[in-house]
Length: 173
Image (cartoon, rainbow, N blue to C red; front, side, top):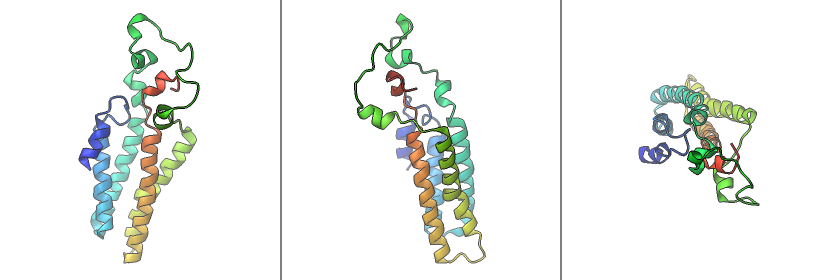
């Protein structure tokens, strides 16, 4: 899990990921989900709440990393030394792999709603379910399913909000 997180953390072209909180949230996903899936209710409750708090921190800090990185079309193309760079024509007349995989723009309203869903489903909901007086196998199973749904939304946002610097080259940032 740590090695996978470091693949993203070392990518300077994606400032949102290039931060120590990336491996931290990956490890918290694994620990909280692992505790939940093996039925360690008391540990899972605590880890879920910690992971939810760290997820909020990650989102709040990551939203400004691209702007704070100082990336421009000049730095993206490497032509800044010769002056101001502007596009004469787009690099392609149609879509390509880079545009479909690395330049995804999600509206703030949709991102906010997905974040709320991810936070409630992945962390808060399962912690509340595990706090019920009777933590039966059914309740734990429901908490696990809810956790997975929230993590899917969170992971989708992780990639959809990546803000890769290649978007500057295509004039999409």
